Length: 402
Image (cartoon, rainbow, N blue to C red; front, side, top):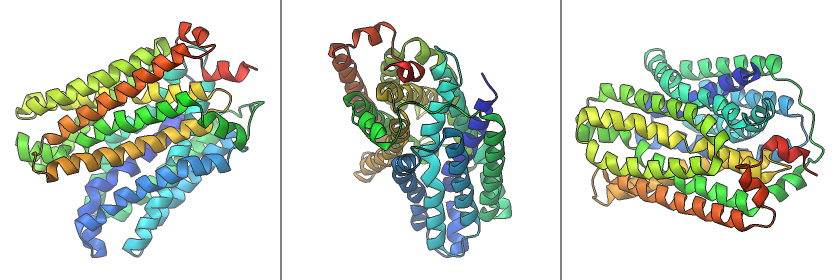
C-alpha cells in the first residue's frame, strides 16, 4: 500500500474526530454559550446537514479540478470550518461553523475513495479504500475520547483548535504524498450526473440509506442503553464507545480483502449479519459482558457494509465515479439521521430503551432486500455476464473501457 493512503487516513482521522466529538461536548458547549443541551444537539444535525449538502455540491463544482488539488482544497475548507467553530462568539455562529466543517466531508471521502482505488494494482482497490476508512475508525477509538477529555479540561474551543491543526497536517501530507494523477478522458459534470443516474448506483445509495440506518438506530442511543438497561455508570460509556470503535476497525480490516474477492456476497453477508446481531443485542444488552461483546461485533458488521457499498457505486458509475462516490456519503448521513429518528420514535412510543435494536434490525433487512434486488436486476441486465463473472468491474477497468 502506497504512502499516499497514509495521507488519506490522516485526513479521515481528523474528519471522524470532529464529526463525533460534539456528542461528548454538548454539556460544555451549552453551559458556555448559555443554551440547553437539547438545543446544543442541533450542532450534531448542523454537521450532518453540511455533509448532505456539500457532498454533491462541492463534488460537482470541483468536477474539472485535478483530484489531488481538490483533496487539498477540501481539507482547507474543513480546517477553516473547525477554526471558525473554535472562535465562534455565539451559538448561531458555531452552528454555521459546524455546517462549514461538514461541507467537505462527503466530497473528500468521495474523491479520496476514487484516488485510493487508482493508487493500487487491480484486485486491491477495496483494500485501499478500506485503508483510508481506517482513519475514520481509529478516530472513534483514539481521537474522539482524547478530544472529549481535552474539551472537558481545557474548554471545547481547544478541541476544535486541535482538530484544525490536524487539518493543516493532513493538507501537508496530501500535498507531499499523493501523486498527481492523470485526468480521465471522460470528465466534467455532465458525465458525473449521467453516471449518478444509473439504476444500479441509485439502488446502491438506497441500500446505504436503509442498511446503515440500522446501525445508527442503535448507536445514537447506545450510551442510554448501557446506563439505563445494562447498568454501567456514565463514566464507563467512553469505554463502551471505544469498544464500538475497535469493532469498526476490525470490520474495516476484514471488509477490504473480502470485497476485493466477492463484492456482492460481502455486502449481503454484512447486512444479514447486522440484522442478526441487532436482534441478538435485544437479549445480550441485559448482561454486562455479553453486551460489551455484542457492541464490538455490532461495530464490526456495521462498518463492514461501508466498503462494499462504496465500491459498488464507484464501479457502477463506470467512467465518472466521483459524484456517485461522494453522494454515497450523503446517503450514509441520511441513514444516520433517519436511524436516530426512528430509534427515538420507538423509545418515545414507550417500547423501551432496547426497542431501537429491533428497529435497526428491520432497517437492515430492508437494506438487504434492496441489495439482493439490485443484484438480481444486475444479473439480468444486458452485458452484465462479464461483470458478474469477475465479481465487479473496478474503477481502473472502467476508465480503460471505451
